[in-house]
Image (cartoon, rainbow, N blue to C red; front, side, top):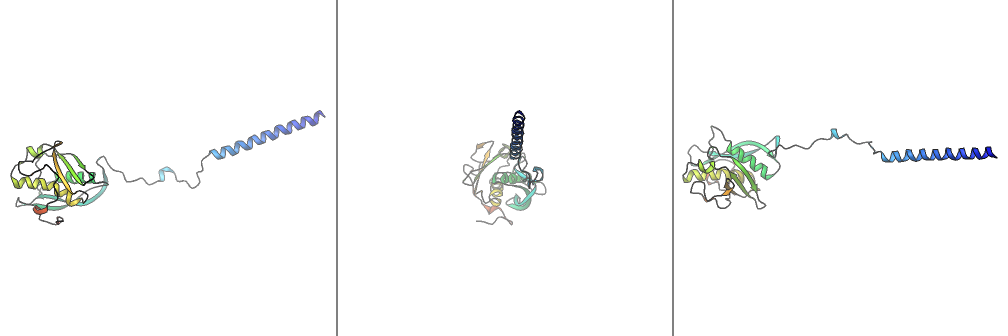
Length: 204
């Protein structure tokens, strides 16, 4: 009788251990994430990266920049490559920086030493281009020279970027009446290609 009781106890213990092991294995499998068919993170193709200027390294677009014509009375439209940017503000910034960086034999209408401090674009399509004080301080003066300076900036943006319909020039973060006493800068100016005489500047 005692032997039968002992066998029964041992059987119960073995059954309990077996059940515990079974439950342990089931729970372990459920807690381990499935990896079949999954690609390792390192094999995923990274998205195109942008540098700190908002442009995409190695990718460019063709635009038209504006340089002073040989007669000194007009702007010549010249095709150049600039870094591609994924949004209007960064693309406009790249265009203005390229306009400021024109080198010989091209002649920029923007006074020497002028730097771009900031650029903003509103939902209405108005761009605000904030330039350093040199744009006014180093300006040679005269109505024609001032017109060429202003519209080399205004038209460089409005000709190349349809999203920009007007441009207001700021100086050192402030609104100004003029750069040199002739062209009213108290409001955004629209594209005016009367002074541009070559391709890429068709009137609306």
